[in-house]
Image 1 (cartoon, helix red, strand yellow):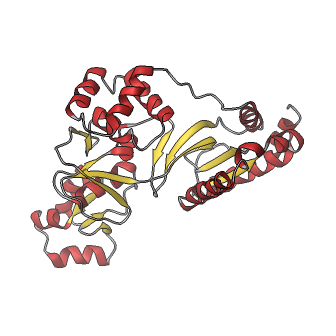
Image 2 (cartoon, rainbow, N blue to C red; image 1 turned 90 degrees about the vertical axis):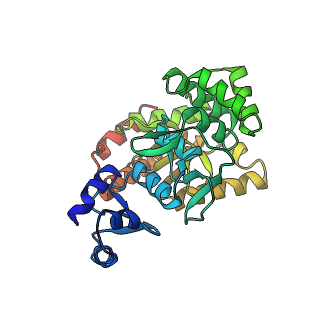
Image 3 (cartoon, helix red, strand yellow; image 1 turned 60 degrees about the vertical axis):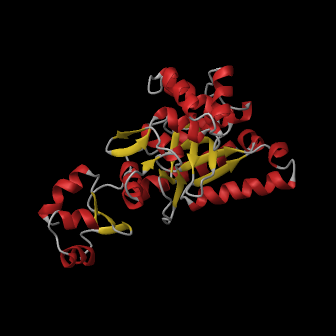
Length: 320
């Protein structure tokens, strides 16, 4: 790598723009040489990354911001992920900009007025108050209420700031939704939605698997928001409990389940579906399939997730 780029790469999550490289003293030919030799890799037009550096959420968010020009902010669901929300991850790149520039894989919102902004880990971003109002129209009321309570309890979001922002954005479609959530102010706990869902989690954990995450929320690259029953987010593995009556109550529900599954698969999630009858009558099958999926993911990603022996799984099947 050219040493003139090192300070820029260090300050910008291993990212640099063509204009920044020119300002640092590199000629167009030198930049093209770095690209030809793959010492830099294009992310968007005019924005490049150092392939030796890890590909992080902050890097992807900042790349979208840099490619969209001055005044652009990470926002909406992407901002929720960058700020940090327990049991939530976002594959969608979502920004707010003074003018909309079309970028592949990026959802851009045009801001008619300057958004409240700050910088989080080097990423220009909307404030938590503005983020909550922006995202209110994109998620269900239960999830919105949970996110508000989570940030309020951690002091990442202050009620006074949220009230002030709602007054300033009184015409925003998200304001009445946030107001309704604040009026109810019910703290929502992450508990299993049904006894069969709880039993599935108990079976899998007793089998020797590391603790699973309950109700992890994912925003896919298509912009859909899905809540998973049980999962290992770091491995992109989900275990779903399918109720016969719930999933076959209508043709639309049946088709929506297929769309959901397809969107998760496109984003590299591995989804295993189980039923109450399978858990009760065929626990060995449930355990064996879960074991093989985790072991495959461990082998592919070379993670440090505990490897479970078949013997541990076999003993667990006799405990339920």
